[in-house]
Structure formats: structure tokens, C-alpha cells
Image (cartoon, rainbow, N blue to C red):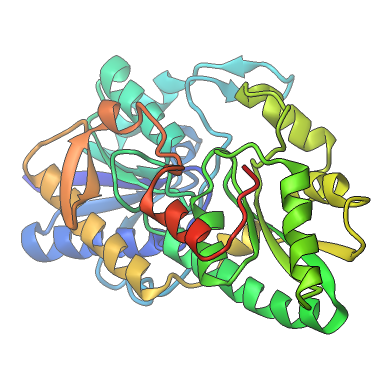
Length: 358
């Protein structure tokens, strides 16, 4: 009997999602001739009426390798255990999801997503009996179980190009330019892009920064004939004295207009310089994946097919010491991978004169 497997993407989009789908489908069809159903808009396609799925084959994978986003669609507001209702309440609709899963004759699901999506998949397996294999996805690169997630290098490339462009305008006008990049809890994008893009200052969520230290760096550059400065700010970076609780930190960031705006407000008045800020935002999620992410996503897709073939449900593929292996989903989502403030990359930044503010 031909196996029928569903595949879906959940959470925010990232360059490389389509490459994972392509690799999984090609492997499943060429090796075992399984039937693969693509589920639209995360888990939503399974419980919607009518079901929103379509069969995937070698033809439907054409042109996906370099295509950004996810052609299946995605959402980060679709938790079936607490699905938003029109009246503002939330309802458990997993019974409808299970009904769709059974109706479609699926044996299991391949779930491509970050910690939130993987947590939902794990809960569906444990509480509703739906077999799941996970594929990690986050441009923040903050899942501790894998060395890299696809999309991260693409985001770093976008941020680095933005820094290259900001350098010329900052130099022309003797301005201090702030670039806010993604990284709510972990500053991997800011750190890597800041080093690659020649930033003078990098502000990370992991390092509460001292406004006077940052201002002193800018003044020091001015004193040696370098009147412009480039500051990279992770979206979760806050100065010393701000709350350590994550929810309180997010409230502070929202009320202050974002991390770059807060940084500017704390530096203005301490230095004699014109300042501008740019929020890179969702540009980091869009566009084609770079070569590294295409290769990694393809490796993950093949590995996910291998896990399904071996009935290794409840496991997530990962990159560990250069090799694609697997790990229990429960273990994979247990902890975040933050920037190691004593690690080699931070030492590299400090050694080359980059100020971290703390």
C-alpha cells in the first residue's frame, strides 16, 4: 500500500522553505513513490472546510529551489489547540484537525517550523496520536539543537548588504546610522552581519548596553577624523536597567518604538552628530535563499524523508558538527541558543574594535 504523508510550513516565512519541500517530495517520489499532500497555511489546511491540501509531485517541485517564501502558505496565528474565534475567544479545534488527517488517509506529517510550530506538532503526536517528523526553521538561528537553520545565512546576507549601502551614505553626511535587524531574543544576525558589514557598534539582546560606552565609541571615532559611525541593533537589544523578563522587555521595546529608536534616544545628547535609523524588518525574510541555505534545506528535506521511511516519529532533523542527524523534538525545543558572550565570534568582534556596549 502506498504511503500518504502530509507536509506543511508553520510560523514566519524564511528563505529555504520551498527547498525543503522540494527535496522531501523528490526523495519520497524517486525512492519510494509515496503520495505527498501539501497542507496549506500551516495546520489550517487540515481543519478547514473544505480541506485545503494538494498533491505534490516532481512537476509541482519545478522552480522551487531558488524561490523564497513558502508556496504552501504559512501563519503564526494557527495553533489548533487555541484557535482564535471571531468573538476574540480561543477554542481547541484539534478534533477537526484529526478528522481531516484521517479523512485524507495520511500516515504522518512533516512539520517545517520553529519552536512554536514544533511544539504544536509534538503535542498533536502525544495528545492526538498524529505521527510527526520535524524540520527546524528560524532565521534567528536560535534553536539550540542545530548548528544552523536555513534562512539565517540569507538574512545575514541581506543585513550585510544593507550595511554596505549605509556606509556610503553615512560617510557622505558624517552621520551615525542605526540599522535594526531581527533577533528578538538572540542576536546572531546582528553579530554576524555586524562583523561582515564592518559595523562600529553592535547591540545584542544578550548584552545590556551602556549608553555612555556607546557614545564614547562614537566620540572616539570623531576625534580621529572618522565622523560617521555604523550601529547594528538587534530588535531585542535594550540598555542597562531595563527589565530582564521577556514579556516586560517586549512591552518596553513596543512602547519605545523599537530597539533602534530606543538606542537613538539614549545616545542623542551625548554626542554631537546627526543620526538616522533604518529598520530592515521583513526584508530579511524575503527573497531567494543563498547557496548555503539551499544546500542545508535540501539536506534537511532528504533527512526528513529518511526519518519517515524509518518510522522515526517524534524526531527533528538537525545539523550537528557538520553532519545532518536527528534529535527528539522535545529536546530540540527545550532551550534557545543565545549568543555566547564569551565565545569566539564575540571575541572576534571585540578584537577588531567593535563596541558591544557592555
